[in-house]
Amino acid sequence: MPPLDFDSPEHALRVYRGDQFCVRNGANLGDGLAIAEEIMLDDCYALEPDATLTRLTIQSVDNGRYSVGPGSEAGKPGHPLHLDCALTLMSPDGTTTEAIVLVEANKKGKLNEVYLLPLAPMEPTTLYAVVGIDINLARTKFAQVACVSFTRGTHITMASGEQVPVQNLRPGDRVLTRDDGAQKIRWIGQNTVRAVGAFAPIKIMAQTLNNERDLIVSPDHRLFVYQRTDALGTGRPEVLVKARHLVNGTTIQVQNGGFVDYFQLLFDRHQIIYAEGIAAESMLIDSLTRPALPKDLSEKLGQTIPGHTDRPHRGLDVARALLEGRNAAEILRRSSSS
Image (cartoon, rainbow, N blue to C red; front, side):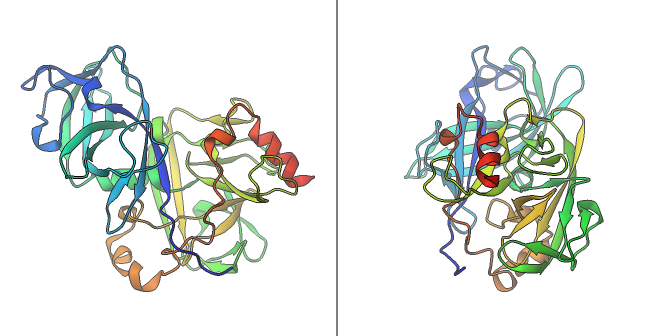
């Protein structure tokens, strides 16, 4: 398949508007959330009683810059979007919650709106004291959210056909890919996070998508499905579907609670590999996910991993609107096996 032009992937976030998260006690009493320079340690914030999460779409532009993407409920598509800082918030019972502050600017560079991206659920009646402000950690934290990840115990199909748990893989191991046959793993990332909010994994129960065992992946992990019949009405047989868009509460569920070990598999090109028999994507490097890499590898990307400057799978994504109100998982299972 010939390489195509790079198509900036989009990530849909659930955020609170800054004026919905206000200081209830502290130096900035009465003020809504602001940029890092104006946030004071020990100020106590609370969500407004009518605060609601809204959809903010973020996409990569170039040179590490971002913008509001199309279809966003918050902000204006095309407006610059900045990852301002990472906050550590503490509730009265001692529980800490991490969040990212995003800032939207207008075309003239003036501040337009501030957003709070919570990395765990937050309650309107709870006071949250600011105990940490880090302007350098925001990109790394967001990269962890944006990276597609497999969970500990997931069996990956090797070039030999052997099924190996992801935690037993090593760089240099040869994995079976859909488009390029046997390919060596360039790098394996691992992080352990609380399985809540943006980090709560998605469990796809055995046989739901013709998988032999349960498959548990990160929420935005895209699964590749070849439809023998175009049951979804996408106009094409090959589709990529985000795991969280398939949640139905029964055979595909959000797993909240506890901790989860996430593993990222990086190849020289963005690949479709096989996990528990399901075709799923490997890690894609762009300006959103690059901060998750070790510094030495990140510095080499421009010269040594050209396959991450194009998207051979561009245009295969299925819009969420096409899946809503339907048992998409069952439709895909039938259409891929009929």
